Amino acid sequence: MNIPKELTTVTSLSRIITAVIFTVFPFAGFYLGFLYQHQFTQYLEDRTTLNRYAIKPSPVAIQDTSIANWKTYRNEEYRFELKYP
Image (cartoon, rainbow, N blue to C red; front, top):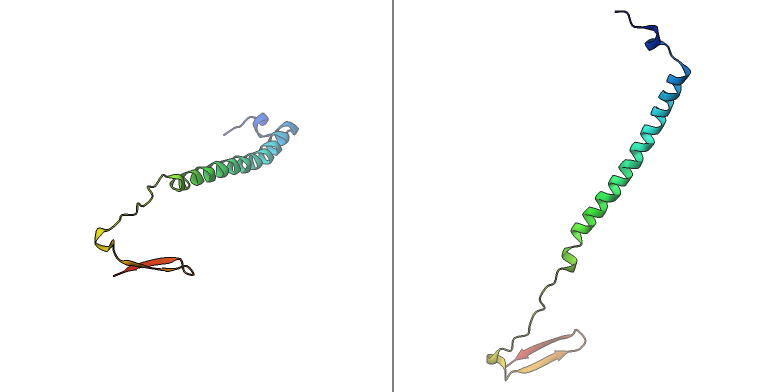
């Protein structure tokens, strides 16, 4: 197979193009990967923080009529109260 000499000769232009390609592509790939990682991390954080802001109903205290006349013991130190007959 005969290949023309112009295609197999190393010229200064071909050296410059090769140097630019082997220099620019790794840095460009690193930069694009860095941007992708930042966007992906932001996406994951947005998905995991949605539940934090969900509105949840607060519990409502219901008065049980069967224990309405019971006495109440309160402990201020441990902050609890207990009803007893």
